[in-house]
Length: 485
Ligand SMILES: [Zn+2]
Picture 1 (tube, rainbow, N blue to C red):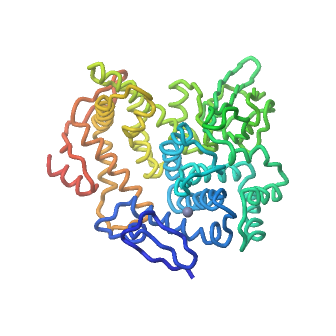
Picture 2: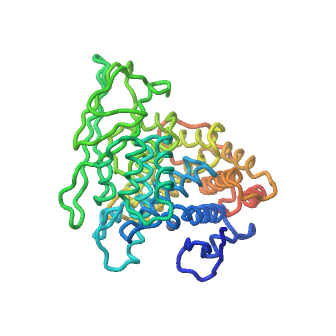
Picture 3: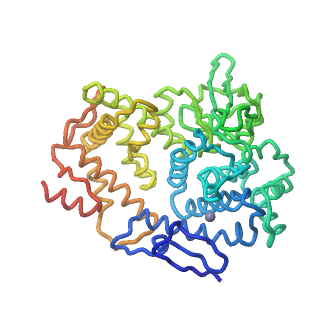
């Protein structure tokens, strides 16, 4: 029996008490008149999370507080996978990674940095951290990446069969995967015990003469309070090598690290991974689907990034390439705005964004995500210090204006098609269409000024001038837009 009680004044999202889950009512109740698509998605995710706790938390519970990620990290992973199945998988993954970088990465860099399984506490409420929840989920995800979905499932089945009705530890959990796979996960388990976000420095070298592609990869984890010397982690780095036609390139042999199932297993501080028998210069797509919660430093030129933005078969990495290009352009534009100059954007970038907006082979939710500019805080985080919020705002507005002004006719056509009135439904596909229509209308609204690009000219601007107002609801905004003409 699964019972829920909804409470209007509740300090958390929900609580998985066995037999009677207590919910903050905003995570159970919604009215189409007032709820946003994000509200519906949150309801779906939180009900799933508490329901999944029946097994991972209640039937199998934690021996003590230090095992908290055993129920939370694992259950967050389960609810993430549930939402990915219900909605757009890449869009969900991007949202998870953004949240991780916004909340958990700063935790790892600050005075409160702690491992996924902490060793001490002063106040137990302080245990409910992004590290225990979100990084804990990433660690479970990495176990699946290491072992493959099939063996991972066997490990989970063993965990449920063996420990139903018990209070257990992280070691008990990891032991199930070691048994199911026959693999030694001792080094991997460091992810539970060592704090900090590892840095991965990568350099790529292509030899046309030898037909070899070499990746020099070095890992390092910065010191955190109480942990000055860090050990090398086992990092599963998912990757792809793309040829000029956008297809994965084959290689004859590889040395310098274990490579299997599209994953490079990094276990030492330094690896020189050499792929032999590669027929043409590849473009490397690294940390696909964000296979490891690390900070990747890989100097890739704009041409390679643009190539990945157009062709990467891993949708997450494709978004990452788009986001990297847009972020770099916005940082440049912020500098210009700060120096009193008008921010200008490369025509190639504006063309890329227009092409993605119009690409029917991509799902609307993904196109909406790709067209959404990074938030002001995200840009500020990338700039690092001496941040000027006014210039960031001006740069962001300028890019939105450039997108809207240069693609006016096509964006308007897509937005109108998406906004054909239909009966409201909160389902994922409808929500994706609304998201795309809204982001296009935002750019169209901003784009009534100058095009603001340099370089090759784009197709002629449509001369109509939109109302310029930002809109909450797509079809209402379009109506207004039309009425304004
Ligand atoms: Zn929970």
